[in-house]
Image 1 (cartoon, rainbow, N blue to C red):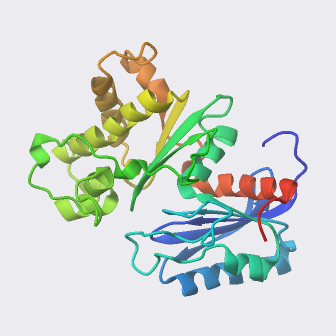
Image 2 (cartoon, one colour; image 1 turned 90 degrees about the vertical axis):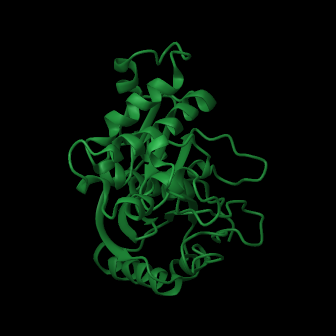
Length: 308
């Protein structure tokens, strides 16, 4: 548990491209109850989430604040007219959706918003694989690919990082695949996300036979991102999670590729043992983002600075 904070009842939402996870928990990050809501259209999905919190209030009491960790891109600039809205997204029907207003109106509590990957980074740094570290980067590889570094230095546009849309060096064995990103084609997300893997091989990575070159190809792309994060941000720990990385054979490929990309340049990442310690699986398993969202809600309750 995080120290120095009295437990209070808060809510959390992890909004993803295939499902929304809603939870009631305490302000130290412990989950009391949760539900999974399939991601359909915004009105149906968000309405179902709101009904969960209304029903949960009869069992636990009303939440005092809510943290929302949502897929993006999101408008996070609090003085913007479209604060809390999704920007242009490949998820059909979700561009322009307001993910904050329904909960402010329905629950009448402070609401904190960030990306799902930023919340996961927060959760892993506080209570997971990065506990005790000074800084952490988190990468998720699933329906999309995203990344975040914490602590965060906000950019001038208050727009979160979009690491999944970085260009990568193509693997020669993968030259015929055009990529699935509707914006860039063969950016990282277009080549290594879950949908890209399905489009290329017709099955998830974990279903490919042992020794299939697909793991080395995908691991090589994610390894390039890991090397770039190390060079750009120099975090103490890099956590790689998401559905694609649930294949236990992938993470070693990512570490090997990152080590090759860096070529011995960074003095603290010059051998396999150092890379094993640097690139880690999530310590909170599937609860990284929902835990981070509970901690965000606690911060909103403490500060009460989220605009009404």
